[in-house]
Image (cartoon, rainbow, N blue to C red):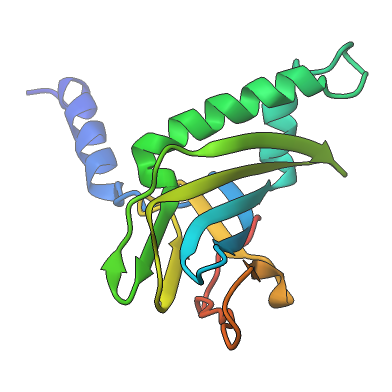
Length: 183
């Protein structure tokens, strides 16, 4: 077989041999804040999320949402975007895992979706009511197991607040050693 007829096969073989496995990497970065909402009886009732998206994703998401090409973002369009986003998050479990006394808790339907656009960044807010209020030690995780979205906790004490929590309750963060950051 002449070299010219084998060249495509050799080239394809070289490309296959040089290929490396794809590694998961994020496409969207979110800084997350959570408010744990307690009832008067001391039971945990809901998690209120506030997710601030990175500037690049924010710019992409608001394209076409202005009242004019250079105008401010239309509030009605932001409200619709918030409803759509929160509705789509249901199939991902809202990227939220809540355990109380080591037991996974189930959420009801997300409520109160809202979105704002300020300083070039979108912030999505929504409430996840627990199906049944529960008392005890809570552990909250917000993450995407596929790593398409990289979640990071807000700096300082702003990562979580405890609304109406019983006396003595406090929030503690366990931050990853190598948190992803936008490139």
